[in-house]
Length: 574
Image 1: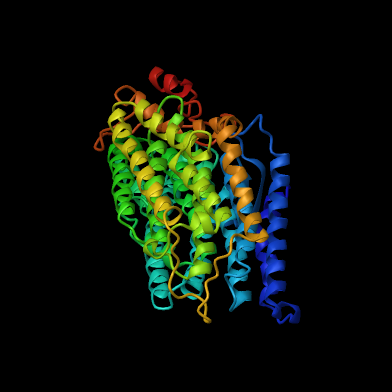
Image 2: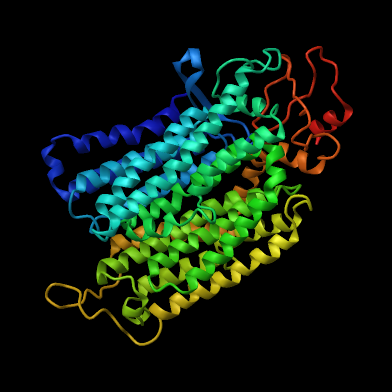
């Protein structure tokens, strides 16, 4: 049994517990901060060990896999495993956490123990969602991320009056959607118990193993898959968030402390896009093809509508918050492109990583200026480039990364998602979606560069009142703040200049997860049933079928080992 992933997941939770014990040393704010920073650095070290042990010649396989039994009678296990998609998202999480802690030294001055405790606990649940190979384990971690962030927003938010409202709205939106997702997951698990036991090893039993549920869901009709897809979208689309269920995000971002905003934009929003890729596409291939056009419309609307909303914002932090909705619309568009070479889906995963870096960095820059001026209104400041040039330089750099400047990390993911939509089959998306969504890139350049022009260039202007003694804290970045932003800038530059390593590693797992949906899209009239009232093609998998990766259709045979149809075999060979 390989315990590395278990250790990686559990360590943050265990390391957070001493913060709630009556340890006198933790009465010092800086001691607590140092302990939290050390804890997250150890987690980063564990993730780097995972990276070292990961076999990049077999990126589609679930590696370092292990399972802890919980309730055998109902197939409840804590299953751990990691492919390259999960690997990069785990590394994003563990990379951002020390940076977030580093940035919080002067931002959090009260209830310090509680703040760092919940922040570190949140890391455990985020890692758990990415390494879970059991869908119930995934769901538990997915749901438990709500609790720490609810507290971080409601207790440590910026405005005492609005922060509780923001926390409530965030929790109600995401929890309600997640409950519907849970209903969909339970239906698939129950459906598996109704299947004949000869179909595959775990058929006819209670199982929440993700691989098993892929096989079970493949036997559902279009109508059943449509309901399950709707349930999955209810939770994951809210988490992304996808237009029009995005309205909770700007308020949550605006009222959250800087650390909360960074972790929300950097990692938590990616739980939604990750869920769509890991579960919706391989579990509901017929429904995905049937409704991809509609999901694509909502993605394009999200790109354009929220970009226009950004254009009229006066609060810098709210502008960046709305930009997240717009940018992640590209991500969803790429995931549902289903183009032959997976250009869109690979670009979408790349975009998840890149958005977490550049947008998280922008929230850090806004947080640093808020500490100095206690305002985020563009009308209250201008000309900061000449007063605090180091901060201005970093801000311009990360804005250009978010805009998608070639050579920086934002360009490659955004370009590939649009290219994937352009290459998408006509019965899925198509060039119209890419052309219209492409306007979002122009709008992003307009509203982000407008923000830069307002606050960085022009005559120097700072708020009239700031410190208690009437002075202004117009100091440039200190060494700690530069150390906070420098790793993010380096990552944005490296991924922008050298994206091939990550892109190549994503090809195999993305192909596995999109295979079934692409097969439906290309052979809908030949192999797969698309009429909701017709009898669905049942995938019968015998006990002699070799182990296969998630999402890849195994050899299609009936219980007597006779071929079902030639077209079914052609679909499996594609």
